[in-house]
Length: 149
Image (cartoon, rainbow, N blue to C red; front, side):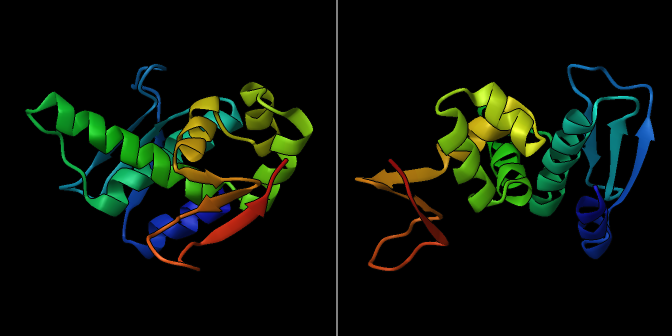
């Protein structure tokens, strides 16, 4: 949580725990006020995941759209941002080696929700026995490379 709070302060976003949000939508970002509300009383992995997701919206300055496909794209992008902010590649590799494809267990090991692990995995590029994180066109253009079985 501390890292999330520090990042929020760094980008000038205020935040608060509130009790008037739905458990199905436990966070909300208001771009006009640069403010995030997070549902109070949730388990730590859900709180961290919701806060991270909303910080993704804040980072990209997302605003609701009248177009459903734009909103859906913003939701996927916020999850992907949160996944890379919250998940350390080395810890992910260790959890994946330990639990295989049991995403619930990997999520529990990493302290995030399963959907954050799924968003993380959706951004990975696998080539042979290596997984590349943040792969781009050209040799050596990636943020991290992990050996996998």
